[in-house]
Image (cartoon, rainbow, N blue to C red):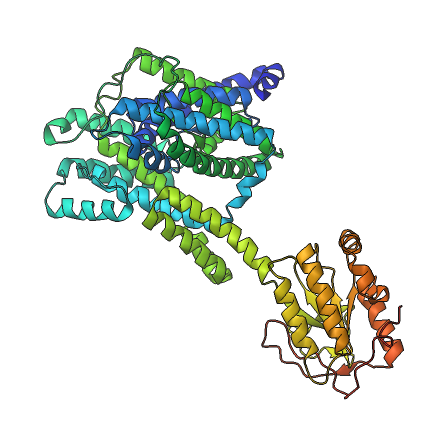
Length: 591
């Protein structure tokens, strides 16, 4: 419980700063909590319950000094996509709350179990390009889904295309409410303008206050604008969520996706703020903190939560020193719902839609997408695929697609790694890629081949086919020297392939030789028995030692040889002097 340690080491001088930061934070937590609850398809009050309990839970178990957890725009659509299909026709709010609370409890269980098993690395399953695409798709989904609410009408749809179609049809049918549209659009413009030119001003709070004033002065309810109304009074009781057994499967699938996104977001945000303060991020303890926050929320009619970068930045700018700032914010929310439940009764619903839409815009990373296009087209296409997965299939299939694409991208790089032929460059130490240095010199009859990946079942055939191609060039090389320093592993499938390849090349008069094998890889090869099958003197400690042994045995001298650098391997490494293939014994000379 890092919170207990923080209490023991708390400095009296921090108290005023934490209190002020907590007051400022509460002004942001209330409108965003209600807005994100509605984004998740839940009553606005549940967003306040969630904010209170998650702040308290993370304050005790979370390791970060100022990280702020709470309802999040990135999780809202995922919660809605999980819960709403399970709610019976007619949309019983209490059943939706119970399902969302159980979802939070399941996310908590996943996080805590993952922390015990030290699985914090699973956050790396979402690569940056796929995360950018996922968030862009999520931003578009939220934006389109909130447009009807912004203009004062509703649409019943369960995907982006349905939302967009319903929105256009509603506009054509004249369902938009002018007063609601005025409030919503003005709210977006105001928030964006304040964030752009007066970043220290609490833009959301200013917009919400002005919207409440406008609703009161101009009687917007009489003009067709929906208002939040009086919130339920009092603190929520401890409640064990009651759901049907057949709901557990769909909830578990949603909980896994939410846990992954929440963890990735939390680790990223925590790392960013910790770097500024010169601190370290403790991934497994962060999972415990997130788990405790979700568990506390789930037991008091809340829903899953994540870290908020914007709210954490507000806390930091307001001078927060510890998690006491979040606790102060939580206490103020409790005071509000107990003493002043009608404070936001005149808040227009389009204003909440404006809060959500401006938050969704911050999720999108269009400059990052453009950067991917200019820097690496393959990763740009991964980002677009993740974007389309969210936009066309939904947020839950979208996160599955994003994870799958990240894993497949890693596998693709290992499956088809970079491979090339090396030569000697005048004025440079070592041996270099002939694609980068087309004028590099080579020893006639010697091909130095580099394969930039571990050798395993998926790429063993790629390695074998390229070595066979190099061995088949005319005139045939006497040695194919594998520069094995990048080869970090050899599995049993690859070992069997190397054994068969060595025999085949030996029958053709070409020797397969290795240099710079790492000690762990060499031990594996010896365990497989491959070191006995391949002539032991065909293993050299360095490329230089292997080259010297070949030159001493054959008398070959470095020669300028034309190369075709247009292929993936920097092809044609055959000798240019017509030397006859050496027999196996001639090639067995050690250093």
